[in-house]
Image (tube, rainbow, N blue to C red; front, side, top):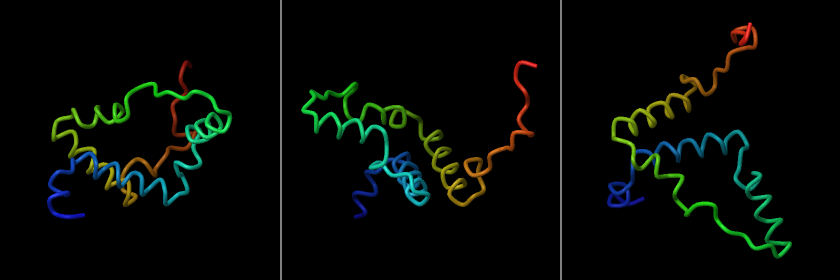
Length: 101
């Protein structure tokens, strides 16, 4: 990536890139997802396929975030990548309070 491309990049883009790397490293790939399965099956069946929203609309929540939120997102992503965040530490069932009792 060139310096000019890096300067145009958003903070949230770096966090999503790291997240995608994390998911890929544990075997979660887009090619194995339900969206891809349904898309391919519809295409093979000559079904009319249309978008529910414009491409990129799901990224607007990141793009509209202030820099402080984007930085926090990136920092938490890096912490999770290194195993120091909450992504890799899920509580056991005995640590989870019983709801509704």
